[in-house]
Amino acid sequence: MIQQLLDVRGIRHVALVNAQGEIVSSAGRGADITVVQAGRAVISSLQTALGQNSWQDLLLDVNDGPILLTPHGNQVLLTAFDDVASLGRIRFAVRRLLS
View 1 (cartoon, helix red, strand yellow):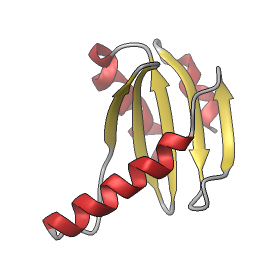
View 2 (spheres, one colour):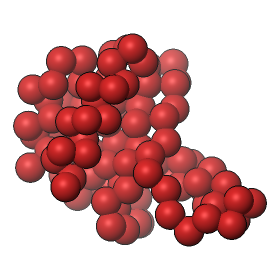
View 3 (cartoon, rainbow, N blue to C red):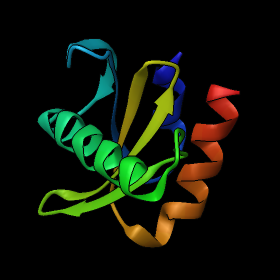
């Protein structure tokens, strides 16, 4: 399923990570998935502070390049890509895949 995201220009790695931080599925050149647990902690804190119970995605710009975290049920899809300028194309492809 997620393998097809690698056809989108700029995407280097995708991984579907479960609530325990384990990789369910992945494709492409490896990325550090430890960022998923840290991202979940940030999202949880923001949800509490803002009184929200859902989220759409979180963009992190780290040393290895931008990473988009997108919820999918109780899992998170990590999408590592080359350039923040590609964010619109990446979000569109991720949403199309997950819908």
